[in-house]
Structure formats: C-alpha cells, structure tokens
Image (cartoon, rainbow, N blue to C red; front, side):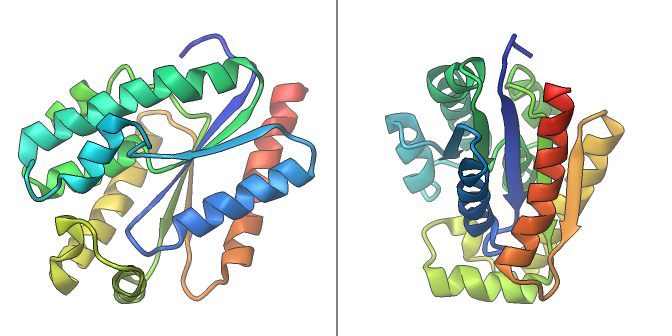
Length: 208
C-alpha cells in the first residue's frame, strides 16, 4: 500500500446486482457530505480498458486475465493512486474480485489470478453485493449483453453468484476489510445507505 491521505472503496458483485447504481449514489452522498470523491470503474476508460471490455469474444483465459490486469495497474497508476494521495475517497465499480470470479469462470487458476494482481492497490473497504441470481441476471439482460460472460444463462449466473460469495470469504480470511451485503429485494437507496454507513465509519476512523 502506498502512502495516501484518501480512502479506497471497491463495489463488487455479479452483473445486474446493482453495484454501478450503488457506486454512483455513494459518490453523490459522499460529495454531499463534503468529501472529495472520485467515482471510477474497471475495466477503465483507457485504451487498455476498452480493449478488455470489448474483447471478451476474442481474448480468453490467461490472455484476457493479463489484459485485464494490465488495465488495472495502469488505472491505479494513472487515476487511483493520485486521487488517494490528494485525499479523495475513490469509489471503484469492480476491481480484483471481478478477476477472481470471471477469470476463474474462464478457466484460469485462482493462484495465477492472485499472483497477477498481487501488486494492485489494496482497498480500505471491499463491498460485495450478492442476491438472487435470477433477478440480477434479468437486470443484466434488460440492460444489454456486451460480454460473453453474460451469455451463459442461468447456470453461469449461479456459478458467478457462488464465486462472489466464495471470494468474500477468502478476502476476509486474508485480512481484508469486507462488507458482504445480501441485497434480496432492497431498493438501491436502502443498499446505498448500508454501504454509506460503513464508509462514513471508516472515514471517521481515518480522521480520528
């Protein structure tokens, strides 16, 4: 971890679970409370990120895992670390847990994914949202399918949900600060309130 004055929060979960909405609402709530906040996402908007996002049909397995990791390191170097050093709260939609799920679904061994991402900036809090795969899958379909990971039907959704739950446990065991929240039928506002409470408590601890 680098020397930093800010706070790094990651929002994770299966496609369609609502993490992008929660990340945006969290950013707005934090900004309203006077915290300088940067909302960002992975894959990033860099050329590497666009290649990773749009290339899931062409790139697979280890190749895609390395491409995603390259974008992650560049994103951290270009955007995340400078914002943290400047005292910002950085809210990132997807991070290393996404690789621990999707790359595993793509046949890449967990040890390789972990080693590939071992130098990534460590979050102060990782929020993992889980819920009913049928519901999140329907939301992802309604939003529009842009990745082959979204085309696997109900079986793939169940695997993705199980892997996120497994990753949440692994991160806790590894000493990471994790908020694992079961969404069920909660509104985005209700989920954001839970996450906001955790983040503000973390920020209070930083300033104390």
